[in-house]
Length: 314
Picture (cartoon, rainbow, N blue to C red):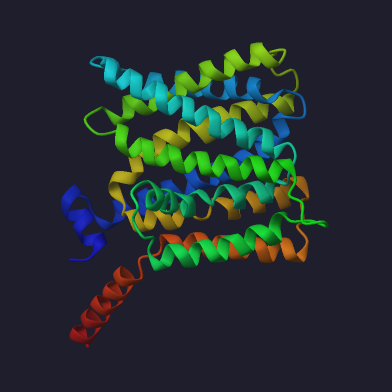
């Protein structure tokens, strides 16, 4: 039985539920793609760590109100796991937030998507497992794309591109650690707690390195509320609710559209246009990400299955 049918059988839902779930995931991905634009907007009047404190603080409050029942039986293990994940989350979003200040929105979106390629590479290094051929292909395409996107005259990479790429590496670590820590704990309570700890780290760092302030313009308030409500709280809740009704293949491919949305928002609202080699690099990065995600054998099996069904009907 192929992936779609097995998911529906296991969850007891119909095809319409999966369509709704895929649409929800698409909206969540669109929100995440817009986060680079809103971050850039916010940085014009608010410093980076203050943005993070407000973003995750508001998101924690909203998500906590929705999932407050999950906290009735939270134990020390869940709190510790939330602290660890929140600390990593704060580190990676800090790198991306500061990086966006020094690079283009489009570059940030495509470079951060490289986390999909870094995850299997890190797993191969940590567990001494030879990477799959699709990962090697994805890495090769992505490295070429990175060079076209980021290297300028003198073969130099600007600090913003470096920080966003570092954020992608940290996100791949976050994904691996999350997989280990979500076993035997309430994943929703853990997810909400990590938002809270990220917000606390942002508040501490803003007092240490900045002069904390609330947004004082309509643009800065729009940026903060969009980041906290749409990109963090709604994104987290939407993903949690929808992912159980769709397939891992659909989820991975939909999430691959995040840098495309980032580039589209950058063009529509910031008038950002990449040079020709930049778009070529972006295309190679996207192809590399898709190649690393793609399960060719599963796709061929599904294709053969569909052909058999068609022939039997004819």
